[in-house]
Image (cartoon, rainbow, N blue to C red; front, side, top):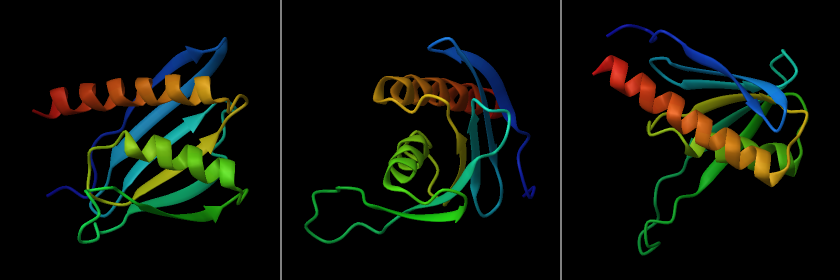
Length: 124
């Protein structure tokens, strides 16, 4: 098994702001970069917790800021980006947004979902 996949990336315009997206799967983690500043920004490790018995399959996540601004908004955004992944490994999210409004985050999540579908179609 290779240590990592080839990165998949694209640049999209979200709310008139150029936004660079990159996703790459490694053996132990999945890397996701979302930037509107041409830099990595805050690095947050998002891990899906094991489901508790009788929890109706409600997913919970642990967020650990590895580098950068440690605030609730950054963690919520990182979790939303990570939830677009269909992998069971921890997701390292690098995010640097000029506009972190709910609308923009939702549009970026849709773009990430499309990007990852393209990745799975190429690897199949």
